[in-house]
Amino acid sequence: MHKILIVEDEEDLARGLEINLKREGYEVLKAARGDGVLALVLRESPDLILLDVMLPGENGLDVCRELRRKGLEMPIIMFSAKGEEVDRVVGLEVGADDYVTKPFSVRELLARIAVRLRRQGPHDPGLARYHFADVELDFDKFTATRDGKPLDLTPKEFEILRFFIRHRGAALTRERMLNDVWGYEKYPTTRTVDTHILKLRQKLEPDPAKPRYILSIYGEGYKFVG
Image (cartoon, rainbow, N blue to C red; front, side, top):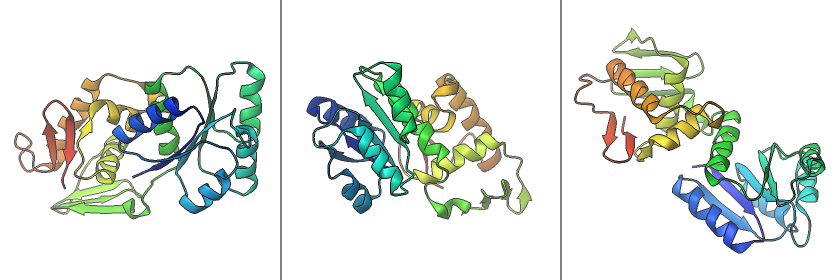
């Protein structure tokens, strides 16, 4: 589970973000002031930080600059009610990875978060290899076998499987899969997910019509139990 730190002094906004992030399966930390963020980050090691520019105690630009000076490299997405280009430029210059102007679309922000986390690479180093039933997966070499015979999996199918394994046993909506696997920059339709799942079942399941490992969750999406 990825851990996200929200640094925002507007209580309603922070609470709304927390609700939406938890709904997506993230662990959430919150801070309402800029001073003390460095100590919190060193103690909790969040995977991504949502950082407002205007904060009491210490502004977001100084917080971001301080985190980068300490060698902390997790993605930082800054947001502010200010829309001037100079603010965006300064935010990126001090080390932010992205900049969002208030008011913003929560759906777009969630997509940006997913893209940034995915670009960080595998969250779990144990995902170099994985096996279930008679299927062997090697994510380093992008090779797969079933019952000892090579499987022809596409790069996107490896991404989907990696995502499933990270969230084994969880009900995953099609929209979340689109955000995390495809990313907001190439936002297809939910039918794209169904098409890829159908092909994966044909390659991995003993009986694709009665799947054992990639299960359909009515009204939700899919769940991986391999």
